[in-house]
Amino acid sequence: MSTLKPARILAIETSCDETAAAVIENGRALLSSVVASQMEIHARYGGVFPEVASRQHVLSVTPVVEQALSQAHLTLNDIDAIAVTQGPGLAGSLVVGMNMAKGLALGAGKPLIGVNHLEGHLYSAWIYNAGEAIPAEPQFPLIALLVSGGHTEINLMTDHLTYQRLGSTQDDAAGEAFDKVARLLELPYPGGPSIQRSAEEGDSTRFNFPRSWMDGTYNFSFSGLKTAVLYEVQNLKKQGKTPPIPDLAASFQQAVIDVLFKKTMQAAREHGAKEILVAGGVSANRPLRQTFKAQTEFPVHIPAFSLCTDNAAMIGSAAYYRFAHGQVSDLNIDVRPTWPIV
Ligand code: KG4
Ligand code: ZN
Image (tube, rainbow, N blue to C red):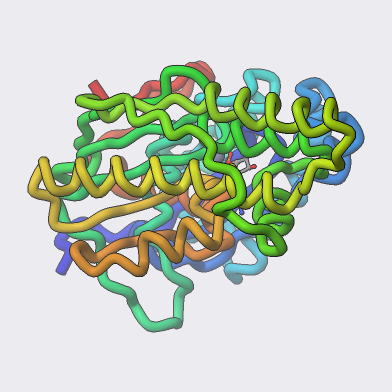
C-alpha cells in the first residue's frame, strides 16, 4: 500500500495537437479525462501545423478544463495542485497550457507542478478509471519502453521518479517512422493507425525489411528501414507493378515490432527487471501490444488504449508522485523540459 499523502490534481496537456485536461486522485484513480483532438484539422496538411495547433489550443483550453472539472463533479476548490506539461513539445502549443495552468494556480492559490511529457507517458501505466477494479501497480525495478512520435527509448526505472536511460533512437522515433512510411505508402495521417489498419489485410513475411539491431547497445535506428520501404516501392513502380500496400505496411510494422520487443526483453533480462512497461503513442499498436502480452517471462504493463496517445491524465499521474515527494514548481517556470533522466 502506498503511504504517500492523498491529493487530487487537475492536469493540462497541450504539447502537440491535443488539448487535454484531466482530474486524477492519488496518481492512479482517474476522475475525468477530456481530449480535444485537432487531428482532422492537421490531416489537411499531412502533419501538425504548429501555428494552427497553438491557435486551436487557445480556443479549446478553457472549455476543456471546464469539462474536466465538471465531469469529475468538482470545482477548483476541491483540487490540491495544478499540473501542466512543461515539455518537450511545440513551444507555441506548450505556452498555451502553461499560461492556463499558471493562471489557475495563481488565481486559486494552488501549487503548480511542471511535468516532463515523457515522464507523463510512463505514468500512464499507473492509471485506472475510478470506480473500476484496481489493477496491479507496476513494480520496480522495471524496464520501460517509451515509443512515441518524437521519442523512442529504453529506460530502467528503479523507483518512482528515478530513471536511467539505457538507449534511445539515433535517428527517427518509432512513431515518426510509422508516420513517414505511411506518407510514402500514401496512407492517411496519422500514420500509425493507418499502417496498422492496412497491415491487417497484409502478409508481414512478404518483404524481409532490415532490422537495425545496434548490437551491444540499447539504441535504435529506424531511418534505414524507412529507406528500404521507399526503395522497394520505387523498384516495384519501375517494374510497372502496383505496390502491394497492405503487405508493405505489415512487413514494415513487423520489422519495427521485432526490434522494439527483442531489445526490451534483452534489457529486462540484463538489468534483472521485475516487470516491463510499454508506453507512448506507438504502444496503441495492437500487434505490438499482443507481442508483449504473449510473452510470459515478465508481467507487462501497457496503458489502456485511450491513454497511449497524448492525454492529461498521465501528466496528472506523474505530477502526483512529484507533489507527494514535495516537488512543486515556481510560478515563473518556462516551457523548457526538465527531463529527470540523467
Ligand atoms: O505519444 P504520442 O501521442 O505523441 C508524442 O508524444 O509524440 O504519439 C504519437 C505517435 C504518432 O507517430 C502515431 O503515428 C503513433 O504514435 N501511433 C501509432 C498508433 N497510434 C498512434 N503507431 C502505431 N500504431 C498505432 N496504432
Ligand atoms: Zn506524447
